[in-house]
Length: 301
Image (cartoon, rainbow, N blue to C red):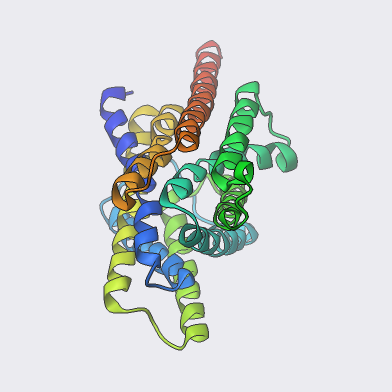
């Protein structure tokens, strides 16, 4: 295990993913959110296709898809590839880039809660603590404390996207024996073409070429290259450590949004940053403890 080599890979994956929210907000101002959701996933498809050609997943144990996997594949495409990204793009358009970035951290929390509710997986006290912290963050960022009614729409849509990706992550876990780049290729191509086609059918045309290229670029880097770096980190230092360092993504996106949009920094934003960082630390520490227990069990077997 080469932790020194894996840390920059995981940090790079997290930062690139975290940049997706503020960069998407820049693009969605002049582009249909449904089209942007599709273009982002087509960009991811392009990047992971190159990753497959380069053999990024060589050395990872994987099995081919079976016919019995089709319900999971369909759910992965429709919920994780179409519904959640579309909700996120509408949410990013309505919310600030700072809010969108931090609330993306809800994906990890919703993944754990859905696993607990529907798949009877154990949820530790650390995860429950993260749920409480992110709930407080959501209250701060939706403007509930100030009664800002209009400010709630965007964050609620982003929360809906996080729930969708929580479902997607649990469904995808049932396909964990398969090559992750093949799964993302299937999701990216199918969901990307569907969303872009839906936008074309409802709006009577495609977005401007500059917007299309910008969306493809963000999808390629923030979704595709991020995933490739994530897998490379998995190979050298394992899932728990990779997930811990990858979790810096929402914080990186929030800080970038402050620079791009020159938003005034308020006390509620400062508290939201601290709460998000604390929730990330809790989930990361739980993952590291679980990884340590599994390694200890392997040594005693």
